Length: 87
Image (cartoon, rainbow, N blue to C red; front, top):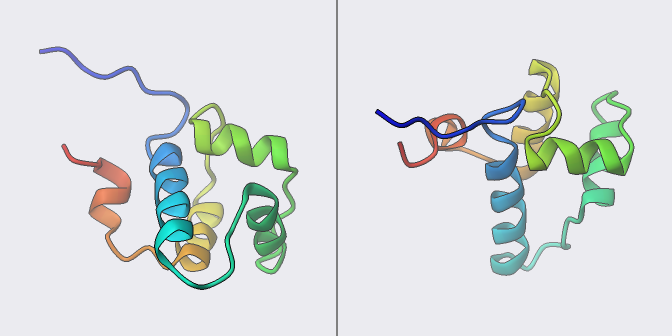
């Protein structure tokens, strides 16, 4: 059984995918990585854009409180998809 190589987190790329899809389909303001960093500050989370980029690329660990904030910011409802993808 072949397993996919994973980075430091399992859902960063799906967070990026969800954010970009949300930008394409919703009339609400577009959310770039800098906007996500600003939104995280509202949850008391300080992060620079390059760290957020690493998070989305799977090259940075995601702390549980960061994940909760990201879920709230983006309005992600399908947590099974976020964690497991299409597996």
